[in-house]
Image 1 (spheres, each protein chain N blue to C red):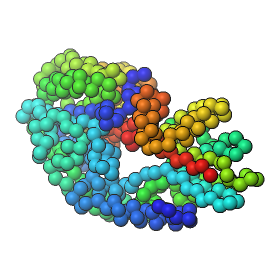
Image 2 (image 1 turned 90 degrees about the vertical axis):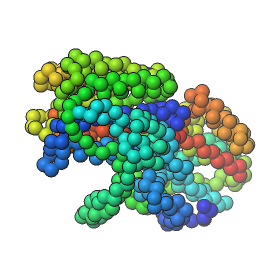
Image 3 (image 1 turned 180 degrees about the vertical axis):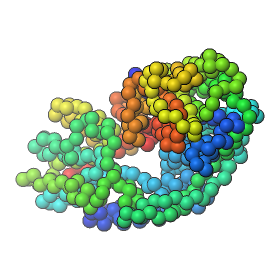
Image 4 (image 1 turned 135 degrees about the horizontal axis):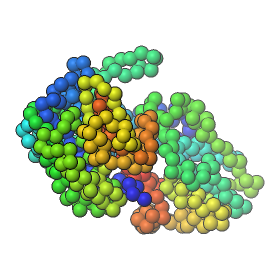
Length: 186
Length: 283
């Protein structure tokens, strides 16, 4: 859902849309009960202006930034083992998320990155969900981590990405878990 | 490490319930609640929870095979009713499609302001309470062993099956030695990930202190209780984790066994037996 405003209000709207689209049939008891309990998801949202990148990261989705200087940063910072834990996730039903106060959770999940002196050009953003986050952060040394990020960014088609993840999961190199990848070259 | 296989659609696991339906199961477990009725309710709820955990946008996915064996004066046989009648084991998607009926029950839930409100919930029923005659426990365990031998052959790389056995009395078709031998055949079946896990629940409404997840035979009162202890599996770390999730502390030598169990104990043992962690991408 494209929306310039990232906030719990955004979440309320997308929840309403999800509820409308996934309304279970009355005679499907398992769909009805599953719907009552809600679906859980991690969340990463970003808005980018010339001056800054405002992001929200909830759960176990993280953003890697490869800056024009070559430096790599991770937002939020997470050690590899943290991706193996049960993350606190947002729920499709209000009141069932893993937070007492979703508005506060959004506030705590916020990060701001200032644009480099020469602007965003030549900055690469790599957003990944849990299994890929774990794979990247297992490489603790910056050169090794860079290699993994550059490799993922080089997978330019969905087919090549899917084939690689299947192969790695089967070989045990990547954990069997959600694999999502978004690469933005600025 | 044993008991570490991921549970996925490619490698499902199996949960088999073996339920005593002898005459004494018609006695009260608590005031106004018979053992048979309560066990049937918890069993149906456990099946429902398993099915909901497998429910994804595309439907109920097959992470589990499930089955029920009942034993009573009428003999030993599969316990599902309705369309599944006669099936010993079925995929969880088939189970979800085929309850005998879906009841509407009322449940009290928090109103978010410190009070309780009643709400209606769907409650599918696959297994009906029954209680009559003798206790052919040995025959039931032999049937379980045969079924699981086939299942393990067909799923050699899966997390091994879990058997939840509920009884309130002693076998009428064999001695304690016979029961132990039949149970040893059950837990002797295995996949590459480990042996079948046999959890025993002895229910009683007659008083006496419950013994929960014992780690030593000497803690058990009497020969019958000791015999069931010996047949119960040591809980592997995965089951210790499940116990911790519901606030139960068990040690590394604890057995999957509750003697003289009460209402809460039925819920606890079924919960621990049916809370496997699905592979991450399959959650």
